[in-house]
Image 1 (cartoon, rainbow, N blue to C red):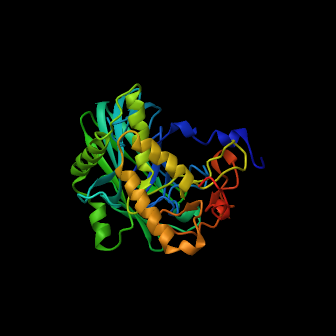
Image 2 (cartoon, rainbow, N blue to C red):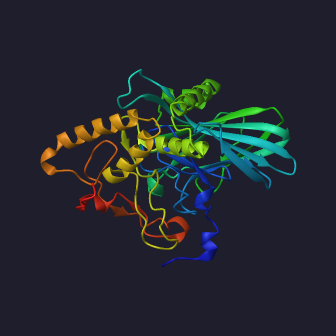
Image 3 (cartoon, one colour):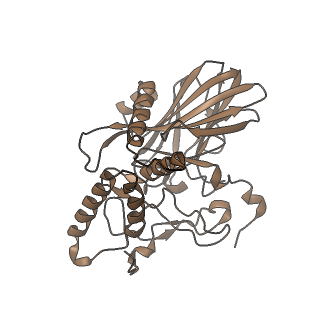
Length: 370
């Protein structure tokens, strides 16, 4: 319980206030306040660039929300994983739409069946009244361990770099300024009926960076992403009580699948505590054979057979690669056995729950339930 403080805990949003968006490669957590507080670009177990979830002071985030006090309501748009948050202020209403763009890539269902853009797209829409929207962008690469250089591109956006890792923020006509803490801040004015795209692209350099600063086709990417999720949801065969809740659960489970291999993570996060202030804080961004069997059983009972086929192909390849070593209880999403555990001592943990761990030493345990 060292370092546990009720005052410090107030700096953290409740876990229930987060919603997940993803592209079947990785996921991000979006708070009710419009802040992305957890994001690992590229794949679930990559180093986080936003990790305010695990340290309210040191961890990075990317927030869009009204500049004045507001309340919010949110929902996923129909049977999709496209998130919509409606903010209400004393002067009006605005809607924030958050998603990771994806679309079908192949006709077959073997592993990687989606194409991704490595983008988080955020659409701000004025519904009524005039609203000033505050933008805060504070990346902290490698779990806030790496130094970061943030450079402004006038009237277009910004680029953040740490070594070979890059984040490109496209937010045209927003007057961004340093926030004094290693990030940027700015405001945009939204009138009723106005629509503004803010796009975050990871891993681009050179000419790709220039293209990322002037993104095009955002509405088409939204349409294709909605179409992908609606098409997937339409295959649900369950017609019993609480169908909408069953389908929403299925969509959440689909977000946990790493499509390039068919592996399934137990969760997209690390170190959320079993007890606030406690030490049972584990990294669940790996594939447990036991947990996956339960996930697949749930999906198969409501019509999703292809996900099981993809996973079994991954498991066969993974086992054949090192058959002499026998099965582990868990692997990385690409089948590596080495998931060595370490503590990130510089992070305070969610609501001061330490240690913060990456990797998972349980991989070396012998558990018969697999």
